[in-house]
Amino acid sequence: MANFIQQVVSGLASGGIYGALALAIVLIHRATGVLNFAQGEMATLSAFVCWSLIDHGWAFWPAFGATIFLSFAGGVVLEQTVIRPIQNGPLLGIVILTIGLLIAINGLTTWVWGGAAKQFHGPFSTAPINVGGVAFSKQDIGVIAISVVSVVLIGLLFTRTKLGLGLRAAAANPTEARLVGVRVPGMLALGWGLAAVLGAVAGVMAAPSLFLEPNMMQTVLLYAFAAAVLGGMDSPVGAVIGGLVLGVLLNLVGTYVHWVGGELRLAVALAVILGVLLIRPAGLFGRTAVRRV
Amino acid sequence: MRRPQPKLTVFAVGVLVVIVLPFVLSEFRTVQLATVGAYFIAILGLDVLTGHSGQISLGHGAFMAVGAYTTAILMSSHGVRDLWTIPIAGAVAGGIGLVAGVPALRLSGLYLALATFGIAIVLPTILKKFDHFTGGSTGLALFGKPTQTGHGIGVKILGQQLSNNQWLYALTWTIAAALFLVAWWLLDSRFGRSLRAIRDSELAAAAAGVNRSTYKIAAFGVSAAYAGVAGALFAINVAYVSPDSFPIQLSLYLLVGAVVGFFGSIWGAALGALLILFLPDIVGLLPHVDTKQAGPTTFFFGAVLVVLMLLLPLVLRVGTALSNRGYSRPQ
Image (cartoon, rainbow over all chains, first blue to last red; front, side, top):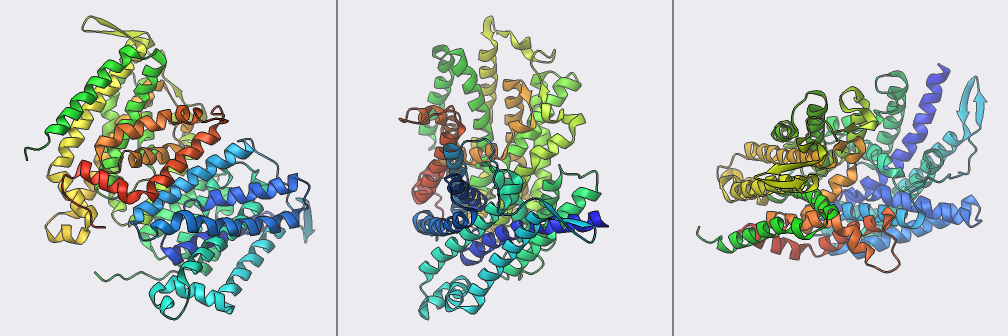
């Protein structure tokens, strides 16, 4: 039983990371209808930036803050320079463009930081704390806390502020939003910035347990896609819950189904993606899209 | 219908170049170009699927892996000569492609991209899991197997002694030329016209009596069969397969190749295949860039793709002009 609870908690910790990245994917998908395949690599780049700052003698929290700021700026610049020009082009073109970004950013991180894995010391110790015979790792608790805080902050921004209202309006109906005075292009750029911030949180939280290397987020990206699909591509709440459910599910399946073990977790995530897409494309919380032809 | 004369000329020139090249290039370049031939075939397949039927695949490396492992397993455990494994690899991959084409019907553009991307990421872990078939992480070595034509030494054809590398080159490009002609014929026929009609408007195509499901599934099958043959030739050329021969990067590079070759036009496929192999050399020409490290090359791969997509209208126009002869794509 103790083992079971431990697995659930560490599953929630990884689930928080998947959820944050999934939320980033959903934010962009809702606003622009694009699946950003480069989201994982953007997160890796953020984590490397944070690592470099710490390597130059910064303490963790200032470095984390600076990384968040730089990631936001990077997301906005990316939207302005490469996404904006083909925003209204064919879907295939935008998908391929984000694939290009994936490859380019992956190459850039390898170029600058090298392919060797780096140890990333997070703000939380890996020492366990005992609660009623169950050993929780402080790192897991910390990761869960940070993911929850960032997701709640983004949630508050969207539901409680005028800016958030503008963001939602621009995503839901760009034409009418423009008519009532929302600056839609600015909102889209902001959306990319926020997605980059969420990615940065996910990347920095994942780095201590995964070892920092250029391909670090490749598997996490697939988990995040699975989480987003499970929760419904249009539902921010669904993305977060999808992430947590997936994190716990993968941990339990990996521990108790020996045939799957550690190696086939990715395959389980793929099965989730395919299963949901084929059986219930709207996911758990998404709306079914009805199209007039 | 009596217009494709300039294309025949281009094809003839292309064949001539391919025949002459091994006589002027080093052995090393010859074997590299044999690999380009394998990529060329895979990109042809991707052109049929993504360029013409409009179904995006980010996981074509997976079909190459199916072909490569079919060849490797037949050669090493079942004593089948390498040449005979090529059509079998094409058939197996094609069959899996047909099966995969059925659920793909239910996935619209983005989601198909997502699903195929997932398959490409997961594939190496699955290959490692079923190690009694695939040799696990160690892979399967084929060099010096009795089933290898020429046993890695060389082959005598029509009184001409070819070195092993020249033989691989000749084999790959002969098959590539044949498959190019098949693709040309297919895309110029009712099959190709139906695919383009579906790509441009499913509704209009259905109204015109085109059976969408059949054609889309068939496109998946044809495309996968091409990738399977490409994978078989890849395995024969390198004489070794392992899960790490088929990373997600391979699938993405194939897509880059298809895009560089003016998306949807089989005529540009060779250009894309050449880029995949020679971009490292091109990048090496830049000052202060160390191509012994993987980063810069990868970066420029991505950058090329991003720039091409920003110039997308231009790319599409050239591609359409090359492949469709007057059918225009609604913008």
